[in-house]
Amino acid sequence: MIRSKLFLILTLHRSGSSATAGVLYHLGVHMGQHLLKENESNPKGHFENEEFVAVNDRILHTIGGSWKKPPSPELIKQLKIPRRQVETFLLQHAKPAWGIKDPRMLLTFDLWKGPMERVADITYIIVHRPIKESIASLVRRNDMTELEAQQILLPYLGNKQRIREQLVEEGADIIDVHFSDLLQHPDELVAAVNQRLGRAPKKRLDDVRLFLDHSLKHF
Image (spheres, one colour):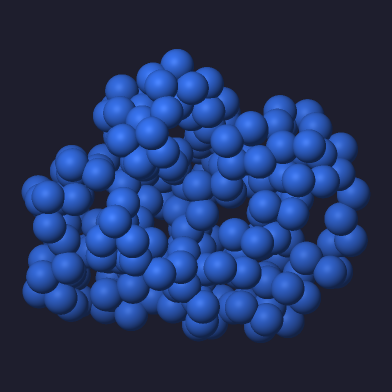
């Protein structure tokens, strides 16, 4: 089994995951063959692999959930999915340097973690944004109330904190990214990713700066 380098982005919806994934894309990390198209809420693109999104949606649907009806980690862990089937799916998508971005991963992480660790060396990129900003952004995008957005996002936040604590205890490779800092100082993430790819710290930094736009903070 050929191992590869995987950058797994973990964060809430509307918290800077698309900007972070875009940075990886412009650094030459393969984000998927079929990516979700840009739209009004993500004008520069999602950099989100449609096939992983579809699988995560099916997993959530199986237990009566969805991205906006997050199931508990306990329900997720009860699902029995053949390990070899998951690993085969991952190997079909694996590249020497590849990335996955889908906020639903915070909900389905416990199913993916073991198979991902068996097929790739993983760097976990955990993106942080004040929860109030994420709620406000979700309200704007989905035309919902603050209470509705809060009820959706708080389970994601709880999972993010739980998963990060677990990864820290395991000594996993983690890059913490703060959305506002990323827009101001992309060189820090660029250097961190380049280091893990064995490249010069500023390689493709100019491409990343051209991609990032401070107006993204309004989304």
